[in-house]
Length: 249
Ligand code: ADP
Image (tube, rainbow, N blue to C red; front, side):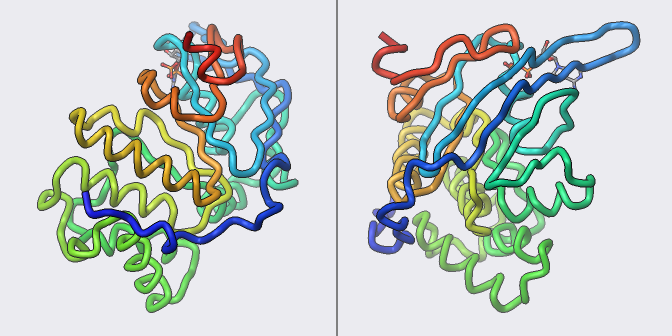
């Protein structure tokens, strides 16, 4: 992959690390389908610090994606609170929560979710246009972030004209372009072959080193091993929280 110039990334404030950016307390979520109720989250307490790279692991069907959706404000919760940068996100109206999410959260999914008829540049500028950024400013920032993820020569390619690894880098650029408080990844390497997955992991690490707070749900121990902190979710609860080296041993 094109090598990334570390100096191109924004530098975090030297003393910006460490304070809580998200505090979740007693978060519960039950899905009801007909007469069946599934308690997907059964009291999640989690504090995420600014600049932290947190991996989330756990068996399939145990609530990892639900936790990501509820802590990021993509989904409603039944009980508890989620405070992001001092804002209780579930106390906001749907409209304000959607706005908050658009401004403060970035998402990288397994299936890159790029818009096929849009170029890389158009895909990346879209979140800025949706929050009302002027078109010229959105274009300038989209181009700058595409350059940073190593796609300087792919601005005008559509997703079908890009490799899987390149598509995922566009998705990373789109997640970062609004300078979100937190970037959430749900199996971000799940659809990549091993060499593209390794490149994606390098990129994720680089984004983290630049000071971005990252929370990544993964089955992949090689990703989790490179995080600073690992949380295990079992049966809708956090059952382990510590250093990857200790928990993966
Ligand atoms: P994981 O990410 O660990 O695989 P999920 O958070 O996707 O787990 O799912 C947790 C539980 O909630 C599972 O039993 C799943 O079937 C259920 N679930 C997830 N999403 C929904 C939904 N939209 N409607 C009903 N049940 C759901």
